[in-house]
Image 1 (spheres, rainbow, N blue to C red):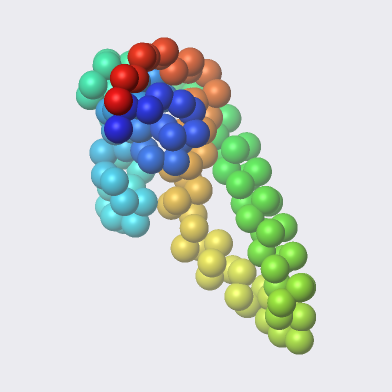
Image 2 (cartoon, rainbow, N blue to C red; image 1 turned 135 degrees about the horizontal axis):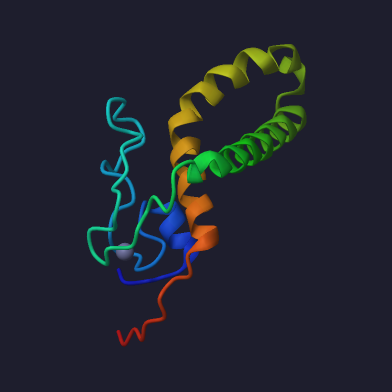
Length: 126
Ligand SMILES: [Zn+2]
């Protein structure tokens, strides 16, 4: 697929410039030895995926925003559908957050870089 938009590259582990090269080395966020290993340059277009040292400190704020949004949605679902079990809310959300940590880590890095890189325009004739 040759779609080049920011949402696609953020969600599907692709380079924010070309939308084809992989951002992280592994496809899965749950290969625990390598979930944080990134390509330094896009394997397809050569875009620098690590612009400067410390660049991804800003991804911490993206990660924080994802956690807050997720917890709000989780809480609203819990209150509306499982109100009789509200005492167990914390017990249920903590393991979910721990399980989502590698996913949010990768999502935050991809979305942080996607804020600063403009996708290439391409004529798709399919
Ligand atoms: Zn690329």
